Length: 442
Ligand SMILES: *Cc1c(COP(=O)(O)O)cnc(C)c1O
Ligand code: SF4
Image 1 (cartoon, rainbow, N blue to C red):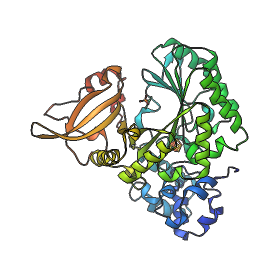
Image 2: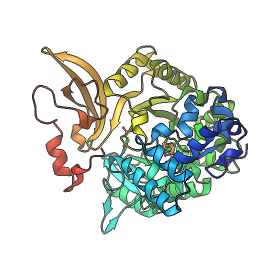
Image 3: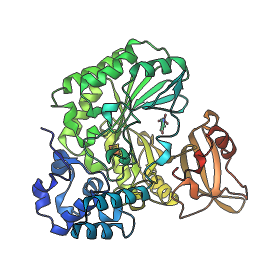
Image 4: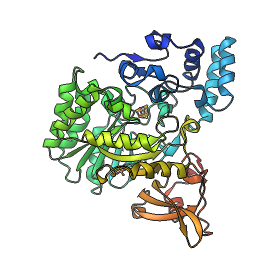
């Protein structure tokens, strides 16, 4: 299948779009000024159920909706466009709305950028001791965009991609210098937007360098869902699979971190074939997704997602809480409700499918799992577990907050038992540079 991207410039050529009411098409055009929008022929033909539009989960996941903008903003932008306001005025307003949508969550830009000698390694992130993230500069886009995306600012030109790199040499030196690093995670955007030879240019030096501490090469991607032909009939599909084989033959574990938000993404022949081809190289596919209101906020959807993934030999890995950026008010779910969904899904599958950890907030102090409500000496509290901490010693530690049905992020929580802070807060302040904690993003 030949890849046909659809953006604001050409999406009205999609036959199914032409059948929609005019105001719905206009809505996409208006919200698409603010949020990034891109889809493709696989999503349109195989993932969206057009009889179910506008409520269809894959439609909502890829086509912007007016409720995704802050209250009242859609109406103003609609009026500016209808009145043919000048371009500069519209651009300024769009920029203002984007800034209202918290464009820098989880310190992606400011925090955790490693330093090696005199070099600041932009395009890398090292937050947890054993894993370093690598953002290859040519991998900073995707085969389609998710409306909930937390990296959306870079797709609308707010981030200037200073957060990406071509420097494999420095990556190799950095991993060699820190023996505690076992994992490199290639991320983006989507690194599999790159052709096989570009990707090989990043991965082969890691193999050739023979760094003994490097065990796992991870690739974070949504290509299986949005463009499974990447592994089947794209021109370089064979070369890509050969590169995966090479990683495995070099004695490294190739961990394919795939994002699937809804079981429908696993129900076409192309994705099944692609999964099989990847697995034949020796790579192991792990799966993750945020829990999203209006998309997958029911236990039945999650148990089906996990069961289908296991049926395809994929390993469920994380259920995330949506980050507080972009259209999060449209997608977010209170922590207590998120835990209920997780627990109800978890209890209805066998242990083989219970490898998923969740619900998890990936936030400033670390990765925090919601363990759910409990009573301790007559006080109703919420339990949490630090899966990964800014400080390695925090891993696997428990803590408790006052029961709160409305909280959607750890910042909304109050420590239980009358304590004035959580166990990690003092040390976090020491680790962070001055001012970092003031950012209310994370
Ligand atoms: C999630 C994450 C990792 C990987 O954590 P694992 O639990 O090992 O999968 C690494 N770095 C950052 C910044 C992360 O958010
Ligand atoms: S695949 Fe990931 S980076 Fe790309 S749009 Fe979706 S959430 Fe964002």
